[in-house]
Length: 238
View: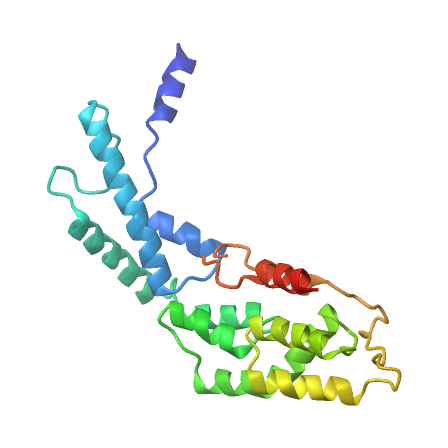
């Protein structure tokens, strides 16, 4: 009998509040205000629909949300905005940290255009200092990506086009891509190959971490950087 009571109690477990849900998401990774608000609204809407369905069959679950037919999308937005304001006031939610985390996650493998585009989707932009730092490092970052993916100078105009297109899809600017190709060809051996470029450990990595996505929480929320599609596109052209 005790087991049966426990099972029924577990079945009526109180759902997480919006605030608890938000804190759980933020514990996994940083979010922008727009992203977290969107996820909370989706959760609040689903919760409201579940309550309505439960009320129809007489088994409405316990919840911290207002009850009754008057609860609508406007009420959801009011509740979500209050939670977001509470999180921001206590620095649980920080757009500054979100921008820093996105730059840190993307800069080693993607160019400035893609990073700016991803932030713009969240209604955010780089600070002047961060933008300048990315501009100063973009050629070196593009070189590192090129070395990991290719490692040899293109032997033909078609191959040069494929390598350039790959870097462009990674968000590197046309100016940086063109400059990198010039540098690669300038250092190429007379036979048309390229001087071996190896990492400090002496290994020729070929395709390495650069070909794997880095977003552990999403989003890739964000299918924001289609690294796998880029690489399949690059291989499909070969």
